[in-house]
Image (cartoon, rainbow over all chains, first blue to last red; front, top):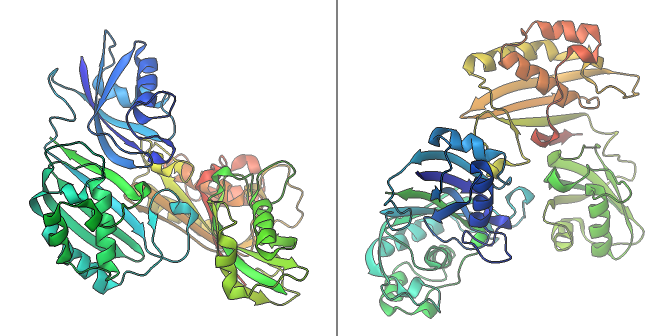
Length: 247
Length: 247
């Protein structure tokens, strides 16, 4: 039996999703916990690699093993006692043997959170980007103006971390919005796929628009240049949340 | 110069506020950080003792030292670099030499948070009481009915942890409200003072009202009995937040 499952996790104390020897990863912890729950070794496949410190509100996985039999609807409770406190598996169902959580994803949505205040707040440690310079309502409007240039199908090479060796850097961004409520800025973006660090570089660049360091229309120049050095800094991992995966 | 300051802290990794030899406490960390910022030893006095795992959105302190001179309005920034990630000092002013943050407090407000859901959420670990059995809107109404018996001046001995040796157990509760929004229950209580574990025992008892294990009017019997064993369990520390101190 092959299972499809949804998990969420606080990324702070993980070296990302994917198993790495000697490091604590989400995949590693899931494999251990599921193997204990099933009583046989389990293989876990994820919908995405996420970096160290990145969080997930909804992350999709498949689980395979030889002979382990727990009814899918009982799996969340069965595995809960074995999971560490920073992971929860909250949904499971049976799935087709051919289903792949990464290749079958049609689109993904990320959320990026910024606390825009001078004063640090311990309750948000590792969960937002603390950005002290004020981004006012005019700045938020400019960020949304800039977002329009990012929407649609483009070659996003300028928004990919240098050193990546992916050849096809064309992606389609379906939606991108910036909202501010009190001192919390929420940037939400969905696309058919994302290049390495793409969301974080987009966020870093939008923030430069918000503080009026660059103009919204400059985004078009950055995209056209296909040159990473024209875009702004990569926003820190800790503000980023994988929010939804659509199949 | 004597300073008055406001701090907030995530209580998860502290053995409470008050200094204890060999244990990590808020007071201990504050003393270290302030002494480094001022360059001379500092004494810190708090508005309350809080238990291990209890949080504070607003906790008031005074700071005294011999010869350290940082303008009060600069203190939050000056000490920020020395503080651990789970404490923030966000306000400071000069105060009268005779001011005492504990004895001069006129009233305090606590908030208690319950996530009322079957499924665990890693983003709320250590920050709420996960309570799986459903408390419906009728239950919330009953909890507010029960709250009425707690309002006012009473001998709250039945709501004090056994083993406490305080003699005067009369306190005046000014307000007590229970609200539920989605699966988050917020219980807010203000009083002229609180006995040891009083808020947590009140919360545990109100929850028993919410699940219809006891009736609202039974609260009056509990108070009149002055007997701890009639009240319900002590709710876990992790859901409790000192929210406001009034002078």
